[in-house]
Length: 354
Image (spheres, rainbow, N blue to C red):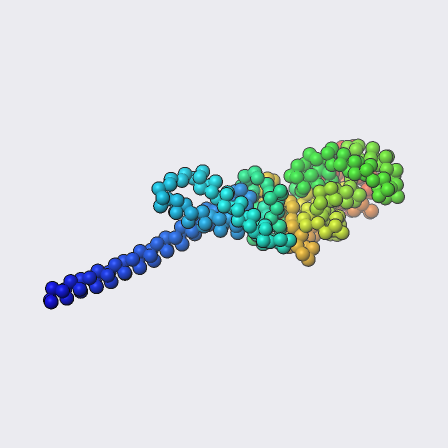
């Protein structure tokens, strides 16, 4: 009888001990899974950023893949990093397609439309995704969300085609688009002589087409309106002298906007850079338009930058000014002389004096 009680006590003790051990193992395993999912989420975010994927989806994908790899490991499968990377990509594609299917026409927070541009209000579109892997993707994601960048003026060469090359830079990161964009404008105008009449162009349609193809001719409002429609984006041109912003394509309600700055004679590009002195490859030039038709904090920063340029008198008063060329120190009076001097010498660095 005593022996039986001792055996019963030992059995109860073993059962209790086994229960606590199993519970402890379960808790440890749960904590391990949480830690594994957290690490996977971090890895997924980094890998997704390099591939241009949504931050939110990449985080979820990383966590799922980490747990899935654990399952594979228990069945003696050995996965190298390339296998894990492929699995991340596959899982991201499946989740993205699910989100796209369930989102309908609505805007999904956190999804980039093009090269991680403006995640806050963009629709996720596979056709517009940039597949190239670049560190600029990571930087743009960071300062698009935090707005810890700075507005900079990217100077465009003074070759009588500054408007076209400035547009080329903000649209395509290419400062040598003048010839191509002049041809685009000429073809657009020639294709619709009714819309682009002599009254609209200030000269006959055919004459204008020949005129705009001349690399010595300058562009202006007409050309900006055509290029806005061609790219399907708003073009905001800030005038330093008045701080006025002329918005081309506004009536079309495009979902994206680019920024230019004009000093009375010359167009440059306005960009958001992660920090002053950062390489141009890190520039963000395309900004999503919110539902209230603003582009968020960048709009206020751009206007502040333009006002600062006005305070420094970094503009040419085309109506009433006396100027001195900052390169050769020759004095000129009025817009006509300034334009002639710029065309003859290529100098556009004028300083106003009284």
